[in-house]
Length: 184
Ligand SMILES: Cc1cc2nc3c(=O)[nH]c(=O)nc-3n(C[C@H](O)[C@H](O)[C@H](O)COP(=O)(O)O)c2cc1C
Image 1 (cartoon, rainbow, N blue to C red):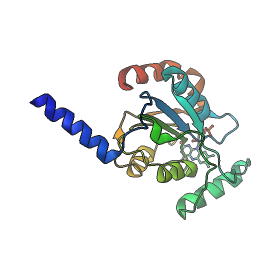
Image 2 (image 1 turned 135 degrees about the horizontal axis):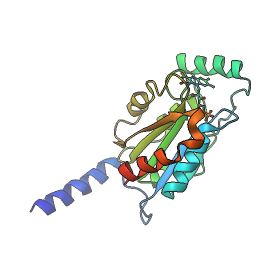
Image 3 (image 1 turned 30 degrees about the horizontal axis):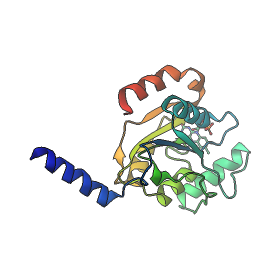
């Protein structure tokens, strides 16, 4: 009886949240944005994809941010503070096809970089296991994890991961244990 009830719950949860595309194996996608020449978040995203066998999707802006640090600071701050639209190029992968989605960003002004905000607003991750990850400077992850979860309230929360951008080359073992202990 208990088993039947559990099955019924699972079936209705899928009906509510929307099941991943039929015929697809349970699978994972790593979505990320990265701005700096060092590409810290890109390096971390690739590491996660390689270690978990996930697909990879880099967020590309319709109109990329300037490469000059002072200019990106000004524009990024404005986009966040005034909540301006930051359109993205069409994604190559369909996030809803995946049962697990990793979403990564460099920390900007103590939260996500605006392209990641666009991604979370435009893609319904309800019922998907979502792991957030970020690279940051001296300010740490700030409000990012909380802000990001607000944009996908019906996603199933996974344990988040953060690291200093400057530590990216030696973070492999930490990523290994995060995946081993938390990513099912
Ligand atoms: C516009 C901008 C804002 C930033 N704001 C913060 C911040 O608030 N806190 C912090 O710790 N680091 C901040 N950083 C540093 C980046 O989060 C850090 O260098 C990150 O590893 C860069 O990742 P990327 O190489 O993928 O772009 C900022 C960087 C930029 C360009």
